[in-house]
Image (tube, rainbow, N blue to C red; front, side, top):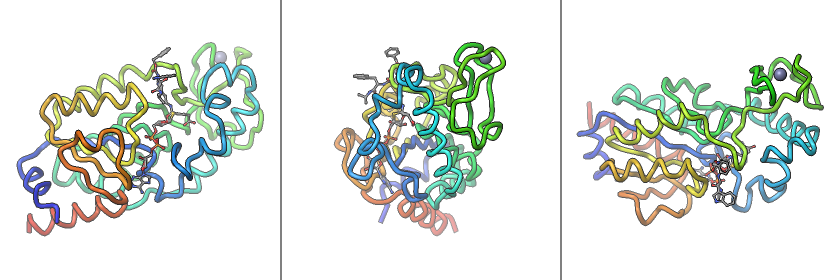
Length: 243
Ligand code: BJW
Ligand code: ZN
């Protein structure tokens, strides 16, 4: 069923999985856009930028506490675990836009986080870092010793991505033999530009998504369906081939 892909895999060493909210949808974590997306209920301009946080820290903090609860009650799904299993055959890098920490919890070894991690916080002024477990039930945003608000370690709109994570992602994309784009609408920049870097460097780009996106007509292979079903299936076929 995936003959072309299996042939490519047989001559590949370095594989990148570039993931978005869709890979965690089957873990019960809502995506951002689309009919079931969280932006249908909550307005990004009120919640996902620094001025909104400074205007109404309580509202934004509460929203993240609510999201943290969903994440903590979720488990990695077969899509996340298939990516871990690919490590048995390839040098695997995960570049994720997700903040849910599920790739790390699944056991992936090399994970670059482009948009932060909901499990972490830091002080808006002195940048001291805090784990969310330090304030599990706090409804209002806690204050740092320096007197300033502590915020979630999430990259909001208009903010720069962590430079070390972005630079390492660009390098991994350039060096990849196969670049999987999994469960992302590919509309948020600069993260989405990583796919173009891979493509320009000659990587074989495979998109896995339940629906066509901005980039579907530019990839080498588009596989329509759930990542939690397609990724384990690719892995199964790979195992059969290498037996
Ligand atoms: C499945 C599936 C299944 C479902 N299996 N598939 C115009 C105005 C304002 C800003 C801009 C602008 N033009 C460009 C910008 C910049 C902006 C941007 O890109 N905006 C676009 C939306 C237009 N970017 C930024 O602001 C970035 N920073 C920046 O540019 O800095 C430079 C700068 C500095 C100073 C001044 C100005 C510029 C930062 C972007 C940070 C994004 N942050 C968020 C987090 C929000 C907060 C939170 O989490 O609480 O990151 S936004 C949100 O989108 C989140 C995600 O990581 C990101 C990407 O979303 P993703 O993962 O693709 O999810 P969805 O929902 O879009 O798609 C899910 C997909 O899965 C769908 O395709 C489904 O079909 C699929 N799917 N189930 C497989 N089972
Ligand atoms: Zn501080």
